[in-house]
Image 1: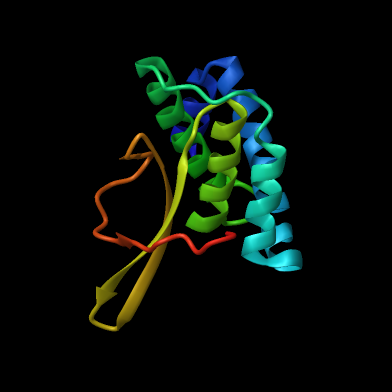
Image 2: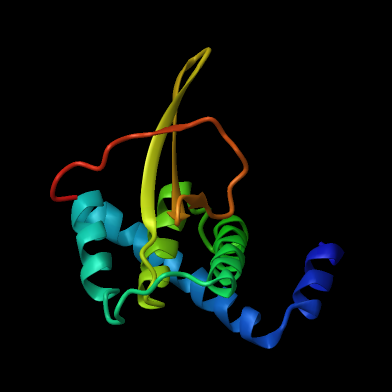
Length: 145
Protein backbone atom coordinates (compact mmCIF):
# COMPACT_ATOMS: atom_id res chain seq x y z
CA UNK A 1 0.00 0.00 0.00
CA UNK A 2 2.85 2.40 0.80
CA UNK A 3 4.36 1.87 -2.64
CA UNK A 4 1.07 2.82 -4.32
CA UNK A 5 0.84 6.07 -2.35
CA UNK A 6 4.44 6.84 -3.14
CA UNK A 7 3.78 6.32 -6.86
CA UNK A 8 0.67 8.52 -6.61
CA UNK A 9 2.56 11.34 -4.88
CA UNK A 10 5.31 11.25 -7.52
CA UNK A 11 2.86 11.29 -10.43
CA UNK A 12 2.55 14.64 -12.29
CA UNK A 13 -0.67 16.55 -11.64
CA UNK A 14 -2.04 16.15 -15.17
CA UNK A 15 -1.58 12.36 -14.92
CA UNK A 16 -3.39 12.29 -11.55
CA UNK A 17 -6.32 14.15 -13.13
CA UNK A 18 -6.29 11.79 -16.13
CA UNK A 19 -6.20 8.74 -13.85
CA UNK A 20 -9.20 10.00 -11.89
CA UNK A 21 -11.11 10.56 -15.14
CA UNK A 22 -10.23 7.09 -16.38
CA UNK A 23 -11.36 5.61 -13.08
CA UNK A 24 -14.76 7.20 -13.68
CA UNK A 25 -14.87 6.30 -17.37
CA UNK A 26 -14.40 2.56 -16.95
CA UNK A 27 -17.66 1.99 -15.01
CA UNK A 28 -19.51 3.94 -17.72
CA UNK A 29 -18.08 1.64 -20.41
CA UNK A 30 -19.00 -1.36 -18.26
CA UNK A 31 -22.60 -0.17 -17.88
CA UNK A 32 -22.90 0.51 -21.60
CA UNK A 33 -21.67 -2.98 -22.46
CA UNK A 34 -24.23 -4.51 -20.13
CA UNK A 35 -27.07 -2.29 -21.32
CA UNK A 36 -26.57 -2.24 -25.09
CA UNK A 37 -23.85 -4.78 -25.91
CA UNK A 38 -20.49 -4.59 -27.63
CA UNK A 39 -21.48 -3.44 -31.13
CA UNK A 40 -23.63 -0.55 -29.96
CA UNK A 41 -21.09 0.50 -27.33
CA UNK A 42 -18.31 0.55 -29.93
CA UNK A 43 -20.50 2.45 -32.39
CA UNK A 44 -21.33 5.04 -29.73
CA UNK A 45 -17.65 5.45 -28.79
CA UNK A 46 -16.62 5.87 -32.41
CA UNK A 47 -19.44 8.29 -33.15
CA UNK A 48 -18.60 10.47 -30.13
CA UNK A 49 -14.83 10.33 -30.43
CA UNK A 50 -14.32 11.45 -34.01
CA UNK A 51 -14.25 15.17 -33.20
CA UNK A 52 -10.74 15.86 -34.50
CA UNK A 53 -9.33 15.27 -37.98
CA UNK A 54 -7.07 12.25 -38.06
CA UNK A 55 -3.32 12.63 -38.26
CA UNK A 56 -0.28 10.43 -38.52
CA UNK A 57 1.11 9.88 -35.03
CA UNK A 58 4.43 11.45 -34.14
CA UNK A 59 6.93 9.79 -31.81
CA UNK A 60 5.52 12.01 -29.04
CA UNK A 61 1.99 10.80 -29.87
CA UNK A 62 3.14 7.18 -29.65
CA UNK A 63 4.86 7.76 -26.30
CA UNK A 64 1.82 9.61 -24.98
CA UNK A 65 -0.50 6.82 -26.19
CA UNK A 66 1.68 4.22 -24.46
CA UNK A 67 1.52 6.18 -21.18
CA UNK A 68 -2.23 6.58 -21.54
CA UNK A 69 -2.52 2.80 -21.98
CA UNK A 70 -0.55 2.34 -18.74
CA UNK A 71 -2.86 4.75 -16.91
CA UNK A 72 -5.94 2.94 -18.25
CA UNK A 73 -4.45 -0.32 -16.96
CA UNK A 74 -3.83 1.22 -13.52
CA UNK A 75 -7.40 2.55 -13.41
CA UNK A 76 -8.70 -0.88 -14.43
CA UNK A 77 -6.77 -2.66 -11.68
CA UNK A 78 -7.27 -0.16 -8.84
CA UNK A 79 -10.55 1.62 -9.63
CA UNK A 80 -13.99 0.98 -8.16
CA UNK A 81 -14.51 -1.95 -10.52
CA UNK A 82 -12.01 -4.46 -11.81
CA UNK A 83 -12.17 -3.63 -15.51
CA UNK A 84 -11.53 -6.31 -18.09
CA UNK A 85 -9.20 -5.85 -21.05
CA UNK A 86 -12.24 -5.21 -23.28
CA UNK A 87 -13.49 -2.33 -21.14
CA UNK A 88 -10.01 -0.85 -20.89
CA UNK A 89 -9.44 -1.19 -24.62
CA UNK A 90 -12.74 0.46 -25.53
CA UNK A 91 -11.92 3.44 -23.30
CA UNK A 92 -8.39 3.77 -24.67
CA UNK A 93 -9.67 3.44 -28.25
CA UNK A 94 -12.11 6.33 -27.76
CA UNK A 95 -9.58 8.58 -26.03
CA UNK A 96 -6.99 8.12 -28.76
CA UNK A 97 -9.60 8.90 -31.43
CA UNK A 98 -10.43 12.12 -29.54
CA UNK A 99 -6.76 13.04 -29.91
CA UNK A 100 -7.11 12.75 -33.69
CA UNK A 101 -5.34 9.39 -33.95
CA UNK A 102 -6.51 6.21 -35.68
CA UNK A 103 -6.12 3.36 -33.19
CA UNK A 104 -7.20 -0.16 -34.04
CA UNK A 105 -9.25 -2.11 -31.51
CA UNK A 106 -8.16 -5.75 -31.60
CA UNK A 107 -9.84 -8.81 -30.16
CA UNK A 108 -7.94 -12.04 -30.32
CA UNK A 109 -7.76 -15.58 -29.04
CA UNK A 110 -5.14 -18.15 -28.20
CA UNK A 111 -5.36 -21.83 -27.42
CA UNK A 112 -4.63 -23.05 -23.93
CA UNK A 113 -4.67 -26.51 -22.44
CA UNK A 114 -8.07 -25.88 -20.86
CA UNK A 115 -9.67 -24.14 -23.86
CA UNK A 116 -9.47 -20.75 -25.50
CA UNK A 117 -8.35 -17.46 -23.94
CA UNK A 118 -9.69 -14.19 -25.38
CA UNK A 119 -8.04 -10.79 -25.08
CA UNK A 120 -8.70 -7.23 -26.27
CA UNK A 121 -6.06 -4.57 -26.93
CA UNK A 122 -5.44 -1.38 -28.89
CA UNK A 123 -2.81 -0.89 -31.55
CA UNK A 124 -1.49 2.36 -32.95
CA UNK A 125 0.39 2.06 -36.24
CA UNK A 126 0.54 -1.71 -35.69
CA UNK A 127 2.11 -1.32 -32.24
CA UNK A 128 0.17 -2.87 -29.35
CA UNK A 129 -0.16 -0.33 -26.55
CA UNK A 130 0.52 -1.31 -22.95
CA UNK A 131 0.86 -4.98 -23.85
CA UNK A 132 3.36 -7.69 -23.28
CA UNK A 133 3.54 -10.23 -26.10
CA UNK A 134 0.71 -12.58 -25.19
CA UNK A 135 0.40 -14.74 -28.29
CA UNK A 136 -3.20 -13.91 -29.18
CA UNK A 137 -4.19 -13.98 -32.84
CA UNK A 138 -6.38 -11.00 -33.75
CA UNK A 139 -9.77 -11.84 -35.20
CA UNK A 140 -11.14 -9.98 -38.22
CA UNK A 141 -13.48 -7.16 -37.21
CA UNK A 142 -17.00 -7.98 -38.35
CA UNK A 143 -18.60 -5.64 -40.87
CA UNK A 144 -20.62 -2.96 -39.12
CA UNK A 145 -18.84 -3.42 -35.78
